[in-house]
Image 1 (cartoon, rainbow, N blue to C red):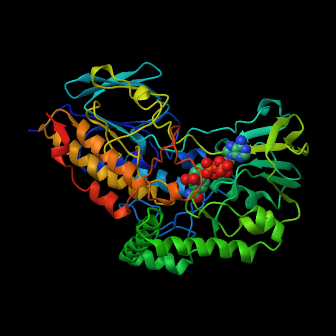
Image 2 (image 1 turned 60 degrees about the vertical axis):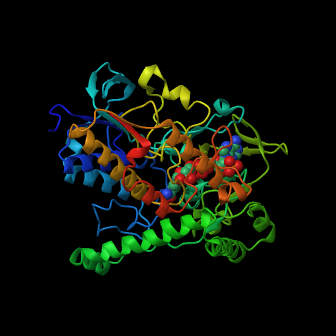
Image 3 (image 1 turned 135 degrees about the vertical axis):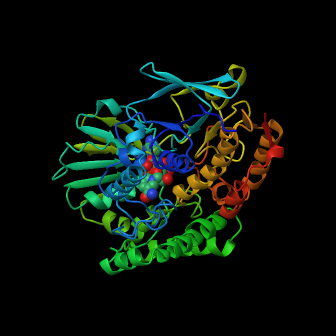
Length: 485
Ligand code: NAP
């Protein structure tokens, strides 16, 4: 017999929280969805910078249960993706169920299969299961450079773009050369007077055009949804399966092909040999998250664009001073310096069985069982937890794989078969030992770079095997690796 008062708390109404809610909705399992902001969409709500787009193809970067024939481009602009998430949340009756402006302050295990969830405004309630859908890239990181506060002009992180600042005729500085900076620069170069890109490490870039999708194609997709399905699976095969295999050392030809395409892109599209040399990374392509752009090289060669690769010494009221003594005078300074992927659920405090703090447990380094659960924290599940496949994959598919696993455990709990489920310490340790051994063969470790995939202890926290293995690993719960009581 099912448990009548059974209830799940989902924390976060971004891409993964919406998918989790849709899944519980389908299973008729009661849930509450907490969101600290005033809108759904997570990172796609927060990021509004010029040039924002997804570098995973539109027909792959969507939920499996919500195909969209109306994508306007092969790679969708950010606002369109945000609109898609809102649309799905609305269509599934989730939007009106979100508890907006409800920041969760504390989640504590009360024992007997119950968690207490408290918000910063003092509201609290008991839940049987907590799903942390808190995202990976939400806590902005500013550059560790002296004098940031001294800057006299406008300055902001790329994910907090200040649209009240006109760009026309301004001298703009961008610190960083990641996926974000390489999208911003081409989008603003024709508007601003000057743009200086402060590069600490060059990036490998693969040139992929972003064509508009013609009306006929949208009509064909509407008439024959199976065409969208076929395209989704085809793109999954290329972008998730084959690409992941190249990075984890299981497709040497694929990695060689990525290397060739990146070098060719630089060779063909950057004319000046000196600029080409300065834009050439010293590490292997794929080691850092690959940049997908056919606009960056043309943009950095514009007469008003400057690549500054002398290290920054400090920020001053008038601009950025580099170690050669030059002052790069600026009106606006953009920090495209990324996020802290290890913030996870923080600043929320999570206390598990026996008062154990997850914040403390993960202070130096994080680890989990199969990316979704942690011993000592029964009925607490992660979407995008440690060792989820991160990088140039569709995070939506990754989230759905994890949700598929989590919902099987929730079904057992909701049916009253068990009150609490958590992974055993032994299974978790074995999993992490295997992860550590396999990680040594991945390009993230062998490729000679550092990136946001590394934690404070120098451990790479991605998935070191194929994407197929990730899917297989979470297809069904292995009850011999779980304590279920
Ligand atoms: P990022 O990849 O972490 O890049 C941060 C950049 O800032 C790096 O170039 C880094 O240089 C530089 N930096 C940091 N501190 C610096 C300093 N003191 N001086 C000079 N440079 C400094 O951040 P991001 O570009 O925002 O991208 C983060 C992630 O967001 C991406 O990897 C991706 O997963 C996601 N994203 C996706 C898309 C998409 O199209 N799907 C678009 C944007 C972002 P070093 O390399 O030397 O550390």
